[in-house]
Image (cartoon, rainbow, N blue to C red; front, side):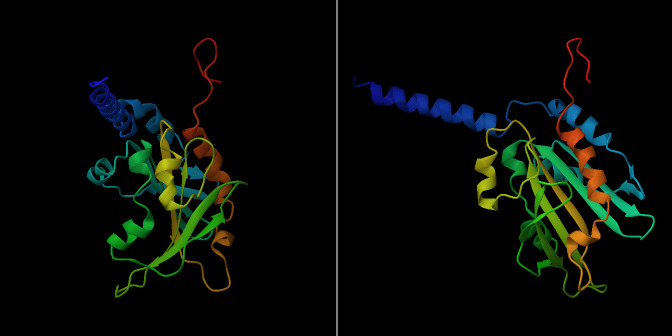
Length: 221
């Protein structure tokens, strides 16, 4: 019995080490996210009247943030000239749970000009945070309307930031998405400016996030 406390401590240390390794993806290979990256790359570059071009991304910064797969594009509506930047990232829940716009944008010199609110975007059930960020003192006034949310395979959610890490801790992969567009003019809400973009984009993202079922012959349906 005198060795029991020491044995329990050893077991707890081993268990906590294994849990931390699983949580931080210590033993997983970046190649495990290859199929996810391939599905992201397959998201159409044109969605109705919206056409896209790659948006700049810093691979070193993505690696530091624990991002293992990503899609970064700027879509432009050929009818109106309006643009929406889409940044979709995937990785293990720990790293993907953090680095929200209230931190990232302020680190880039922006200030949040209003309280963030939870709003519906696109198909029913998709919920995102929304806030506007401005860059004071810039030669050209910049106002960015930013939407962000998380998805572990069950749809887009906007949980309280402090709960995201624990909420998705046991999920194998977590996705986070930023949607960035110009701030809406007075008299219009941000959701009025989406047009048909979200309705076209979200089904394509669902195909990227949820892999197609495997048939008995080993193919996909």
